[in-house]
Image 1 (cartoon, rainbow, N blue to C red):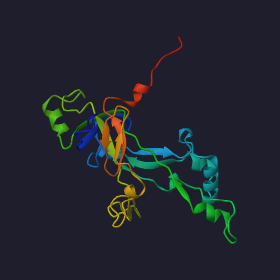
Image 2: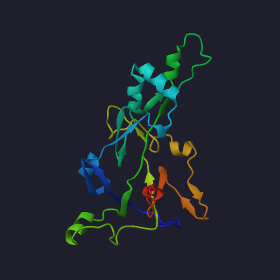
Image 3: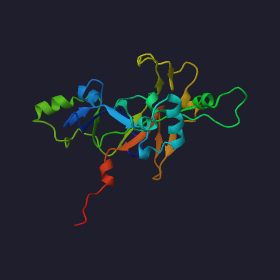
Image 4: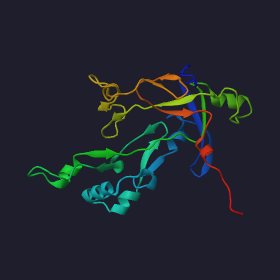
Length: 231
């Protein structure tokens, strides 16, 4: 989408990233690019920056019969840039422990309410291009790619649209629940999804169900950091 809120269209994303013991250039965020599929991402529930409360870690690890340190520091596979999965290794039990009815065990109450943690980001070195543009063929016929080609899209926002689904037994082709295609309820609408918003420049943006994150095509996360030394 352009920065004036117009011109929204579908794009393909390409990136550079270090994985598999080497730096990989111009990888497409797509299940059809085996390099992207093999660029597996992991997360730790106990990462300091995630700020999961200690009592959640302690209660959940105890109930599951897992050593607290192991539960806190286990690396959980979460998928790739085009497909993120939340699994039991990213779940904590947070049900109430207080004022329980007679006959209700505290651990059963704690397990009755769950919180799921995940993370998502796009690579630092990212390139956007109109959907289905043959980047590989262009590189083959123009002596390679350097990231400065005129077809890469600039001066706009990449909108990340999430399709949120619940699956059983790893059957991603047949979800049992969906946020936006349920037969009787659109959960984005029900939960108060905002379909229009005006930024501090006075520009109004219109959203679709699942539009969650904006990335500025002209900025990178590494712009927030500087290197230096004491002497």
